[in-house]
Length: 276
Ligand code: DGL
Image 1: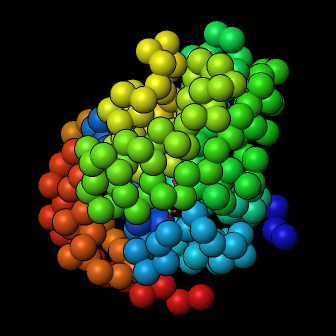
Image 2: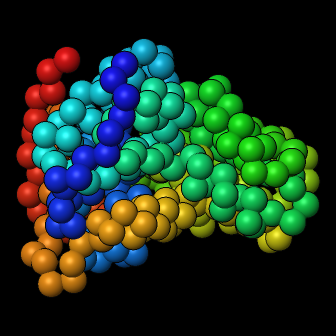
């Protein structure tokens, strides 16, 4: 593989590329938009292949490579893998060969968990793919010695997408998933899936009051700011700002469901056919 070399021709007003399997990464885009209001942002939601959480590493890697090529063609200056599953299963391969900086949500989430925890007993909830990869325990244990307890919660993504945030069935499902973690006396719970910030209230209702919820969106946005600042690539304040949205299928559904995940109205969405 060719040795990676930083691209120097990118300018400050080139966009940041953000991708996810579908809608969930919009929670990360929202945070980036708040922390870095002058940045141009391009979002790609792989709605033709969602969910990633139940798919194999090979499949996720293939989809992620295609999306990254699309973003590079759009001259992004940095890429954010705004999906926990793709951060766990594709990022370690992608970051070896790319010429632009690429970050995921797991390392910033792990850092935030360590900063939040006092007893170093940390719970992680996520998709089957993220939990099976053990990416969070590995990332956390690189920073500090902690006891990590994981729980895959495959039913939560469909419940959130259905909009059943305050339904009894969601409360009961959450309760059942987190029961084994509560028994381990965790003081911090990492929301290791982009959909779970929408369940914050449901989780808080069912957790002990002293448990801190960690959502990696804000820490990821701060990490983006730190990298761009270090490379002198932050957008100029008076540049023209845009937010662009692309999907691989069903733009109308994306517009409807996306509203729950993104703080602003999503107006123009373009469907793109990615070729392998
Ligand atoms: N975005 C995914 C994640 O954060 C959740 C949805 C999916 O399974 O594709 O892991």
